[in-house]
Length: 430
Image 1 (tube, rainbow, N blue to C red):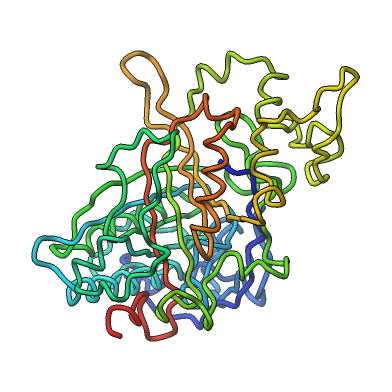
Image 2 (cartoon, rainbow, N blue to C red):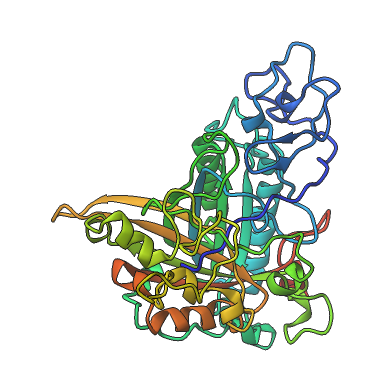
């Protein structure tokens, strides 16, 4: 779990309103309820997400900022990568059905893209909507689509498979359940309302029809934006601030580290402006962790639990002094501290953009919680991002004895769809 924080969301303008009919017969769409007369481009929510408002009918009651916050489906990059952390998430992988190939995959991505565009705009499904999200706005909903290594053989597109999509190497901390790993297709769903997120999940599953079946699904959560007095780095289930050194879009080399360039890349052309998502289900051994004293927990991480500041002093954003010693001559930040090992300047500049969800899947029969992190990280090249960091963590991270990697996957996530196109069209119709 490399320690890097989620950047502020990128801003964009909302598309023109579309008239979707409300099931009550009133003629007012869920999207129409987003409006506040005369208000446009307001910055809302703890994540700093910018939204545009459409004008609402006079009788409509404006949504709260949490419900009205809207991400954009069309763009250079897919949504769900640079936006702030969402309160609820679903990760789901599909395998194409027996006999399904490139034609079926293309039709499925076309359906999924149409659903994503409507739902992210706060509209109902085009037909037979389940009404799960009725009365709610888009609530920062994002849907993100990716392709697994196995998809290319099943669709006859092996020559278009990127080298960067080669399977991840084995790591010593792996205890992987193969049934909950990999997959032909991957969908990441996030929203700041649980019903909005479930509505999207159900629609995606229904859209799959006979073309694909669910391979695995994982459900996660984060703190709801606005729950703290001011925006701050999220905490994980160990109580630690998780993601302090995430790269930010304001940094000059951000795009170079996170997104595949549109030219001069080793990747095929269809991956231009895309990214690679590593997905890991990391179980936290919370009973063991919680037996440690506060000082012992801080030594494992290398940062104060209260405010995320390095043990060498300062605030959360203060540069860590790796050479500082105490009165006994011992390093203040232990040699095997998680934060020391994952520093980009100690890893050849390797950087990943973390965008995880916590999870809790109940209590085992022996009373142990099945809880931890649905780790999702983004990079332009996993062989220069996640892989070298995880190899280094394998060699002596103090946190390793308190976590267990139980599922793993890698997906190629193409760039965003232009208006009138669907995600992955350049691959599936190229």
